[in-house]
Amino acid sequence: MTPLEVVGVWRLASYTELDEDGSTVAGPLGEAPEGLLIYTADGHVAVSMMKTGDGPSRETFMGYSGRWLLAGDEMTHEVVVSAHPRMAGTRQVRRAALDGRTLSLRGTAVNPVGGRTPERVLTWRRARDEDTRQLEKE
View 1 (tube, one colour):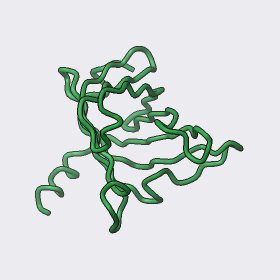
View 2 (cartoon, helix red, strand yellow):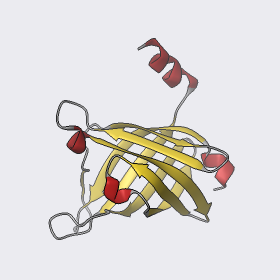
View 3 (cartoon, rainbow, N blue to C red):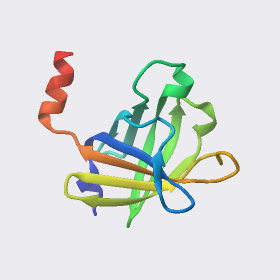
View 4 (cartoon, rainbow, N blue to C red):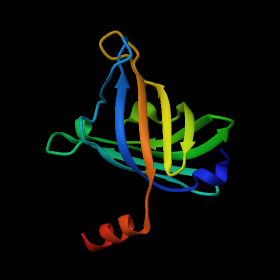
């Protein structure tokens, strides 16, 4: 995978956690989260994800932006601003894999949840032109 291959807009397909026994469970944004991930050619990244349905924004929205770097299969997001201030200034390092139009990012949770540090798997699908046209109509 090269940096040029990941440049563009990606839509969130799933956000899951791997339980200690290897089973997959819903991630912190529930069963059907929505999101966009944007990588620019000059090294900027923007991530917006939300849980569908109502609720307080601190529980239903996750967003940040900053810089990105790909080295081998290691994707690093250097967070500059974030909806969660504790993330600003951090480096989020994930294992990346690209399979056609699907990008998978794997990493551990920023803060241990319930005394454990789950592996989180974010699966993104490259946005198509019709995806952005649909957004323009809404």
